[in-house]
Image (cartoon, rainbow, N blue to C red; front, side, top):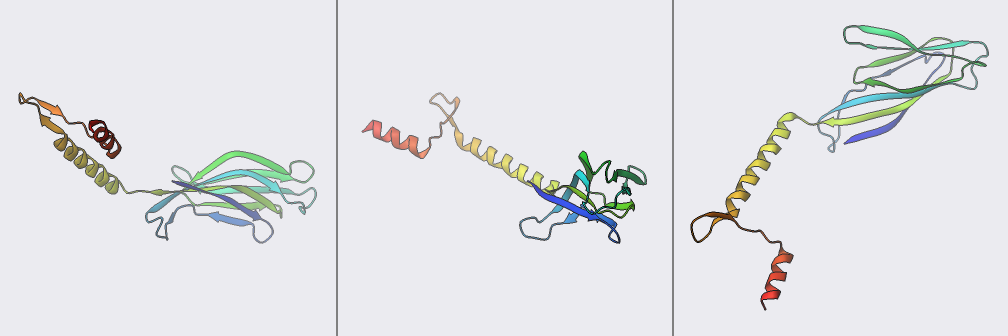
Length: 170
C-alpha cells in the first residue's frame, strides 16, 4: 500500500536550505518493515514579499548514478516569472538538498511524498509455500474413485447448496 502526503517547504534568507532524506525505517506497529520513498515536486513559486528585480535561483543536490550532482531547478523573478510548474519531477530514496543559491526568496516548493512498505522476499516465499501446501491438501480430499476404480473429483458444496439439496430430497 502506498501512503501519499502533501510535501512543501520554503527557502528564504537564513533558511535557504532544505534536505529531504526520503528513506526511513518504519517506527510503528502497522508498518514493521523498511519504507521506500519518492518525492514528487510539482510547483515552485515566489512569495509575494520577494524583492522586485531580484533573481531567485533554487538548485538541487543529489546522487546520480555515479556522483553527486548540483543542478538549478528554477530561476524566478518578480515581474517576469513568479511560478514554475515542474510537472512531476521525481526523486527516489536518495537524500536531496535544495538550496536558494541566489536571491533572498521566499521560494515555496510544493509536491507529494509517497511511501510504500517493502516486504521481505522471505515472507513472500513462506506465504507462497503455505498456499501450495493448502492446495495439495485440498486436492487430496477431493479425489475419489468411482465404482470401477477410476479416479473422479468429488464436488464440494457450500452450506447453502447443501441445505437446498436437503430440502429438495424431502
